[in-house]
Amino acid sequence: MPDQPPAPATSDAAPRPGDSFVQSFARGLSVIRSFSASAPRQTLTQVAQRAGLTRAGARRILLTLAQLGYVESQGRLFQLTPRILDLGFAYLSSLPLWDLAEPVMETLAAEARESCSAAVLDGPDIVYVMRVHTHKIMSINLGIGSRLPAWCTSMGRVLLAALDDAELQRRLALAPRNARTARTLTAEAELLAAITAVRQQGWCLVDQELEEGLVSLAAPILDRGGRTIAALNISGQANRTPAPLLIERHLPLLRSAAQQISQLLQMKA
Image 1 (cartoon, one colour):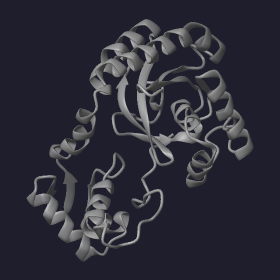
Image 2 (cartoon, helix red, strand yellow; image 1 turned 45 degrees about the vertical axis):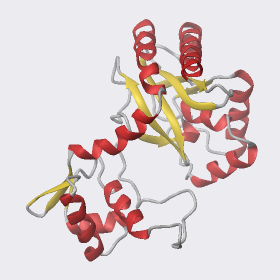
Image 3 (cartoon, rainbow, N blue to C red; image 1 turned 60 degrees about the vertical axis):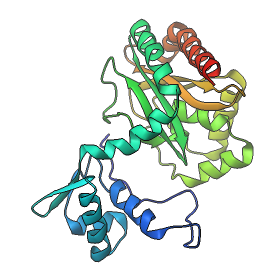
């Protein structure tokens, strides 16, 4: 499944310019977000189109980012510099979760011999904040900062299950629900039933709904107040580890790891 280019940057509810909304700053973020794995180098015209800006507006922002060291140009092409990672690492370093989770996830991946990831919820998507690879199991190249729709992923359903009903329905309404495979649940009633099951059992299995041949299990990571702040998963290939076998072999390992990370967080808080 090819990585699709993102639409122009939007938020959950489109803000209106006013005293508390700095439009120029928002436009700068839209320029940064216009770059992706599918568009790592762009012309001024391409940046303007992807960010939803005029050429003049995009040019001013690109030149500002270049002076700050976040963008560089080679002829007509612009690209981000490694300094842009500072923005993402500021988030990761502001929370103790990731330093505490990494050794637990490495142990889990080694014991299960499957890839392991952690993600948080952002609007209708999950965002990967940590990943330990053992096998390449998806056609999409996932890494820290990668986004996937929450509604059809195991970690996404775990995170959605922690929301109240009104917020859950609002998040589901934000995302287009196109079937990824023949198994993908797209009807709202089916999704609500699946998410309700996750609430009741405390974990989630998604069997080849995101991508053919991909099966994954996820469990919540909780803070001291018992709130779900992230999700942890194990993913494997259905032909090597079909769903029933994944549950039998790896669900206890996954839940134990998620509980261990939660306890470490609670001790740190």
